[in-house]
Image (cartoon, rainbow, N blue to C red; front, side, top):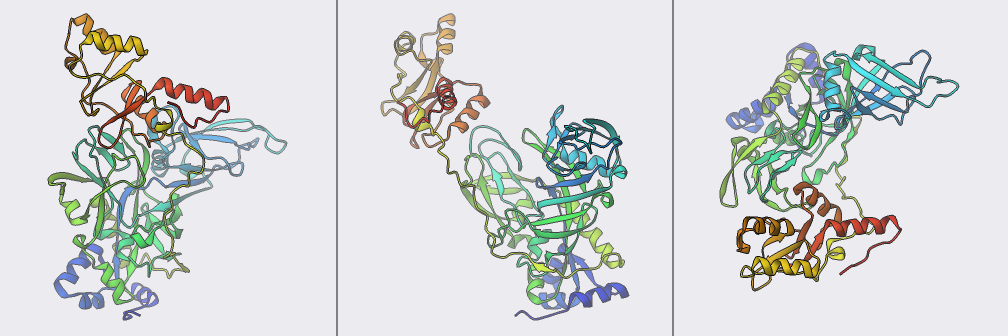
Length: 510
């Protein structure tokens, strides 16, 4: 067991007396570097932490009170954002990522929560089916947070110990929860506060547990359990938290929308780390250069995306990171400035005697793992649906020859290949029509070179999304060496849909 330094009770006694020593995590890192860890650990009682970032797994339980006559709401909306109503008559849960039915993802549950905390008026609409004790079937009214009986922020997963960094190796822009990722390693998006990170400063979860009092959204909250997807062995711990929304501040709860991705809520979370032993102190003194994460290629549509390299938070915060021999700009999706503000505010609360530390009533699990969803139902793959007997063309072919192939084979898409059947481009009936109108004779002049393709192992829904995204109706199917294996079109997807509606499972089709 590591050397004991002090107890939480001893620290609280010092808080009462006004002689507690508190430093933010950044200050403690510097003190440990300049004075040595042991001296710093004996001088400092508490280290405060902070993070301020998008925490999509956030939301609030609200009790609206009863109307007269009363209603058992089966559906409800706040500013046209759906409220979950699988609860009692006038209880509801609004999730941060729910979005407005009229304004779309530009306004969501996170914005409603910020508006409530800011004291703004919110339009409530509710529907019910009517019962003897709840006869009303419809209600519309204006509410503020003061009209609510209870408003409790309950977030199932907050304050990841660290986050993966994201980049994009493809030739198109990606819109993700780590921001807009530019093509061809154009940038890196990351999140988390590094050496200010609450859960990284107590990396072994010795002082943070169920019942720990924390800074939450500008007010006081509590850890109520391990967060969803809690994975401590990978340094991906999370916490489930709760607190009185009425006592929070819009300074530390901000609704936001990631462009073309969705709505969320930025949440300020700060946790005091009592330096009860040398191991806790050692973890609290960990600097950014010793906190690592992985840079992931988000262009690969899989939970097992490729890891490009390990990177420290010092490099990420510096803003320039080496990836595959090139220097790439990195930008944080969370706010380091606001994280510092959280840590400083918590430090002030403790120093002034307004915030006491709590001993957890139970520890957080050290054994939890993050599992992927089991897919036990058959999902048709491209290889099962693609056409393998398709016409192809060579660069030396004339437009007349290609046009004749299209008519003969009843094909709208013809891949252009080299001598080894590797994809070079594609032409469509529309390309041929334009070529005839413009009196163009060379195939090379009209073919599309940057071809959007499919792989045989991909699922049909991924291919359908890609067709919709690029507004195209056919994709060549290629292997890892870019050899053409076949073609899949929107007509093939339509046949699958009709077969599914008729109760037929497609196992394979040439």
